[in-house]
Length: 335
Image (cartoon, rainbow, N blue to C red; front, side):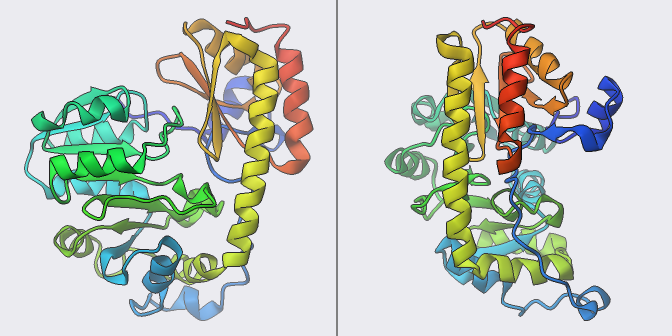
C-alpha cells in the first residue's frame, strides 16, 4: 500500500513552486492557527525522565469528562491509529470511504479486511457483517458529525470496544460531544491547542484495551516536556473557551468567503478547524489548488481530486486569503 498523503508538507511545496517556506500561508492542515501559549519549560523537565503521576491523565479526564481510569496518554492520536489494529485478531473493519486515510492503512497493514462506507447512516446498516468500525467525528474532510443516538446504535450492534471513534477534531464545539461508553475514543491535543509538534494524545477505552497499549509504550512513551505542557494546557479552561470562540468565528468567516467564491458550483462543508470544498469532477479542485499555490497559499487537495480543504487562517492573514481567492478565480474553473 502506498504511503498516505497529508497536509503540512510545506518544504515540498516550497521546492515545487519555488517560493521560500516563510512566504507561505499554510492552510493544508486542520491545526488551529492559534497555539496555547507555552511558558518556559524548566530545565529539569528536559533533564529528567517523565513521572507517571504528574497529573496529566487527571487533567485530561477533567477536560474530556471521562473517568481517569479510562485514559491513556499516547504520543499523538496517530500512534493509537497504528497500534490498535495490531491488538485484535484479523477481521473485517469498516472505515469511511472519504476520510483520514491512515485508518484504512493501519488496519490493512495489521492483516484486517477493510471495507468502506459513505456515511454513518450507511454504516448503521452494515454492522452485522463487521468485527470493528472506525468513525471520525467530525469527519475530515467531509465534516460529518454523526448523531449521538446513531453512534450508540452502532456501538451496541458491534459490541464493547469494537467501535473506534477518532475525535481528533471534536474539541472545537462549545458543547462536549457525547460518545458511547463502550467505544474506543481517540483524542488529539495538537489540533485544538495548536501544538501539533508536541505529539500528545489520549485513548479513552476499557482497561482491557488500554493495558496492551500501555505495555507497548512503557516506560516513557510520552516525553517529559509534552506531559508538562499538556497538564497546563488541558487545565486552562479560560484559554480553551477563548479558543472555541475564535475558531467558531473564523470558521463562519471562511465558510462565507468560500460560498461567495464558489456559489452553487461546489459543496461547502465544515468541521470546526477546516472547511472543505467538494466538486462533482476532479479538475476544478486541482486547478484551484495550483492557482492558490502560485500565490503561496497551500491547501489540501483530496486524494481523489474531488475536494479541496482549507484550514483556518490567522486573523492577520484572512484578507490575504480573500485576495488570493479573488485572483485565482480568473485562472481556475468554478466547477
